[in-house]
Length: 115
Image (cartoon, rainbow, N blue to C red; front, side, top):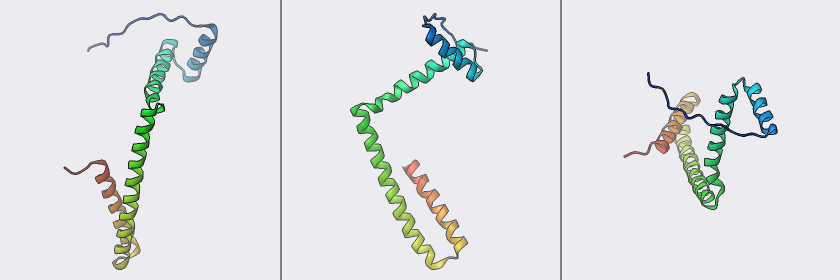
């Protein structure tokens, strides 16, 4: 069994911060050290997401949003075409089954592009 190597660090806190950590411990039924680790991990995760608040992050977010909008529009158009074709030849139950399968196929193609 291998153990993770850990480092012991002391942290100076104001009484106000200490009280907030103790409240967090009580609310989540954690030990103080576990609560501090949990809060540090969450804080670091939030910090890494703050890149999307920058102008470059905004550009990335806008590009991704535009791609999703195009994908959504293509899927709706494909669904409408399929619905019209199926409506001409199938019963209501068959139509629902085929439409569901077509949507799943479209989602699969969007998520895993063909080689």
